[in-house]
Image (cartoon, rainbow, N blue to C red; front, side, top):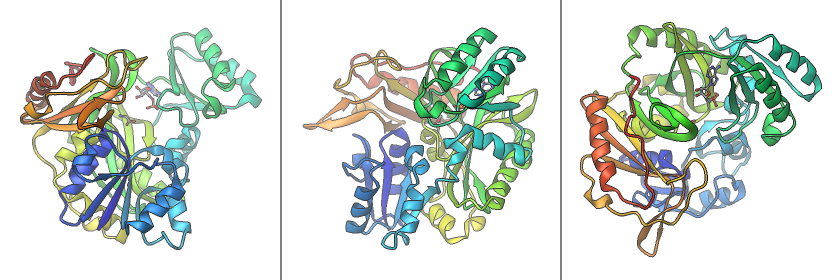
Length: 422
Ligand code: AMP
Ligand code: GLY
């Protein structure tokens, strides 16, 4: 098969690494890819949102399967675009239709979905500019912290946790006033849940499903989960506190009703459901759905998945997913993200990266990198994920840290405490 991966992050590098190991993969392309994906396939300078250019490329290269990394093209309807086009509709696209992707693309849609299916999640109300006054009054009845969510995609920045009623009212008005552009035309106000988060990844064809290795990511820039939110500073898999008892509750109360809901609503869904969960007093609640894999979670989940990923995708497409048996690596995997100094605020690009050849016993997944005249340069905030195996996450982390020291670029920063709360 000829495959095309859409995206350019560490997640897509991890997909490329995994897919390239499959005997089913003949040619592999990544659009647009990064400095690392080029080691496993051919980078193609096409934006993942440029559907007509993707179409031309798929026809020219006889692409059989497209694996969509980020949420943006899914929410914009890339799956529908392929299925409606006679020249493209034989190509397998891994991801949900635009409607299915609303589970991530609209927080209000996701909340209504969970409400319909009695899936445990924080209590909520939704508001638009039409009932802004009602929203302000509603906030006054709440006990802080108060969670405000812009309905639409806001590049991970659309969630605010406000510590006072006054702050929540101000932010609420700003959101409906356009602070996050159209994403904030509707705002969800949620009850704050106090607990520990983890992520479950499910592969589904909209009927049956398989659970992939679970993971926990670390989003804050600073150690001890302090400072600004980032795209993700590290991750671990498995998650020690997620035992069989908790996982059984997650399956029966969350995963199964979710898949039933997808089926009942007739959503065309052949892809990943990433369920962001929180454990509160021993019970799991859904924080959010995503319609794709996580980043940096993919950099720990793929190394723990023993199955042939391309075969799983084929089974997803031909209705035999239920026959698949997921096999997981027993060892732990931890990833640590090396980021540019200043990130997630202003930072410089174009710094020379060296030392990758000295890395031993870790997998390198590149994100914000590019190759120029034979040199590898930084090209983003999150630069390189260093993933390692270990008998537990402590051992894996110490491997990642010792290799993180060997990789050099000006301004490099990384968190040394991934897994600190486990
Ligand atoms: P989201 O974009 O929905 O993943 O939200 C970003 C982060 O905000 C989550 O990972 C949580 O840490 C936090 N968060 C979202 N909703 C809640 C909630 N209801 N209670 C507590 N924390 C939340
Ligand atoms: N690591 C969280 C995400 O990918 O959204």
